[in-house]
Image (cartoon, rainbow, N blue to C red; front, side):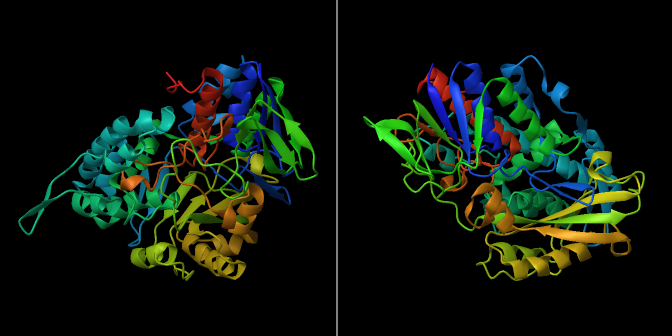
Length: 496
């Protein structure tokens, strides 16, 4: 079988490497940093440990499939998965709180009715039915198949079902997620609940297509999961699965160029001048990391602009985690318009006094020095390339917002440390620490990602910056697609 050079040891790249090795290929992974995982990193200090990338796992079936197809040990034999229940507690601007059970439509409807008033749950439940229809229409072409050569069709069709709304004797249909909220949910707190899912992926709900309804649907339908020890443990398990399939990793090896021979990819050139020949090259890198990357085979999709990043604040708290504390709490902003303008309104970099903040408080003894301490992370969306000075201001605003979820936070705080877009850029190579969003249909293709195949035969791309986009499930799916395209050839039509 062939020799394959994989550039980068991110989650999508390792998923492809494991599958290709099982198919009989000799796979070598070249990673410019000294560790694996891409954005899935861990920060340790004083006996505390924190995930600095994704912190919960949606759609674990993607990774279960990887472990099933690449070895005898299933995923659950390699990591300990637990359902996060409640899925999240939401603290709204007016002080209302609601805890939503994990993967239970009836439970969510009842909880919303109790917290927000009769009828709120039914409106959210009806929305989920429509979101499921959008999911069913887009799941295969967006997640399980290579990007179609006629990809503009995905950009033209809005898969979210039309719900007519009469206004001034005209019938209108929601084209954006914000319009779905305003016209179908019609309740400020339900709108905040809806838009928080888009915001978590760095999407502006005012322009994100209605098809972004699949984001809350994925969480509702497939549940939210946590890996004991942190999501970094998933990266470790995938890395070890690669090693068991005899994938070779070379760390501290920066790829600076591609080799071409007879009109196809023939290997890679490293920063030290070393040349490694290969029959196929798989590039799991961010845009701009390789200046001589050729265009994608399907033609370039429209470039994404105003790419977001994330700011995470790592908190070491004295005192044990209180019993009954939710794993995840979303503290909603008190100034929705101001927050969206600061994030997407032209890059002013201004700080929202109370941004939307996700507070994660896992019940996991592996993350703390002893039972008398608690490890907490705060996360918010920020523009890419946010400066260190602005990050400091935003971190302080995040601490203030988090006090609505942890009233004694300041009294318990031992220390806090920011993990900034600059840190993300160092870990992933993405300019400004940008974080890719999942692929979505409609919006003229603005939220599609370039195809995994390229105009240069033998060269493929994998990971969050390629089809089907960002997020842990999507990274695993991109690895599946690339392996299929190499093993089965250009006629590969996706997983069955």
